[in-house]
Image: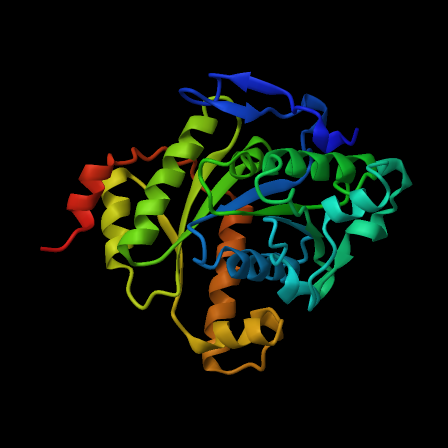
Length: 299
């Protein structure tokens, strides 16, 4: 029987009403590094944000590890220029005997020395994404790969109710939400805030703020933040260079410099500096569905 066939340890009720979540092994605590988890609705640009944020941290001289937490395993491809093998795929190749693995089997170096790991996930409908994240952290700890790391960034899948969504919150210091200046993105952000707040009752994770991504304006994001007591801490405008960088399988920091590129690079560096220096731990009060609909709806 493989480790994925075993039922993961669970606690009921401690992480929110009706919660059944994979619980962190105390021995798997990430020490010494600042840990950030990046959230947002599907397709909002979490991987773009995570990878460019990792690149920005690296330009500040930080030793960075990015962990992709989505079965699509495309979090780090702009850093490495390829779709790297996932931890779960590598474990399958050795029949889940993790002691047979070497670090170079599952950790890959990307732009400017950023270390890249793709956790992957079980086949659809067959297992818990949170357990896969836990196994990835366990593997990194076993090989002492977190000891020489300053920043860890979890790039997390968009489904709020999944254990794969919740697992990185057990490790993170701060959660960052990527949104856009539209109803669906802000509606999703409201649900993510509620999920993070539930986890913060039992873990150290706190909300850092949100990034308005691919948005010309930020008025709706700012109106929501004012209503619930949240902060927008960065704005990535809707510029074509971001799309082109993805097509070229590169971070923005590898694109030919022009005024547009330099401006977005500077915003990512500013965000990295802000997160490194420490953000105020936020405790916004998420809105009920009906209330947020009335706040952001149009007649």
